[in-house]
Amino acid sequence: MINNLDKVSQELTLDGLFVEIGHEPKTDILTDLVKRDSRGQVIVDLSGQTSLAGAFAAGDVTTSEFKQIVIGCGQGAVAALSAYKYLQTKK
Image (cartoon, rainbow, N blue to C red; front, side, top):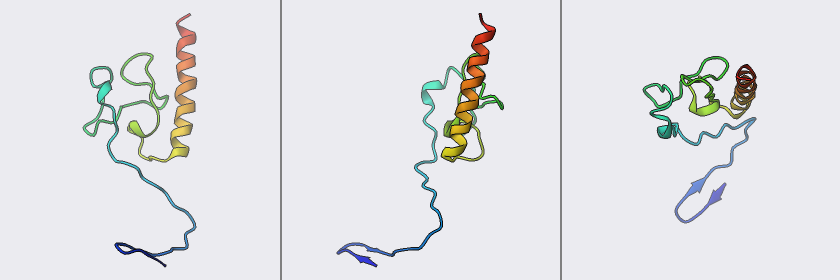
């Protein structure tokens, strides 16, 4: 137990911890470029493709249901490979 003048903290024994930083995707810069939902999340398909051809998105700013770093990393890999595939078709 840690006691300060203004605060009391309690030590907990945990098996895991998920830290959530925020709930609002910061996508205002994309307003006129790609489709977003009512929460401002970028709408993507399974390959990370947005409504703008050649623009891909991944992670917490997308409509993905789960907002965890490991999922965002996987989505980033998919979006990067999809972008590469897209560019290959433009040669």
